[in-house]
Length: 69
Image (cartoon, rainbow, N blue to C red; front, side, top):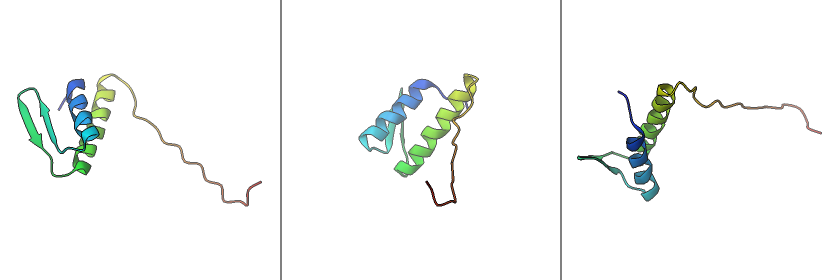
């Protein structure tokens, strides 16, 4: 499914208010938990990035097993 920026904006507004209900245009959706809403937000962000030809963000973890300096 192709998501839109207004849908992402509606989800981010609901998260900012701590709500589980999102209203977009003529639709109203109540999610089971805030965690589910966060997962949806992340999915939409990845989808929008793919639509725009962008790669997802990368995470680099550095680990040092020595004693330090």
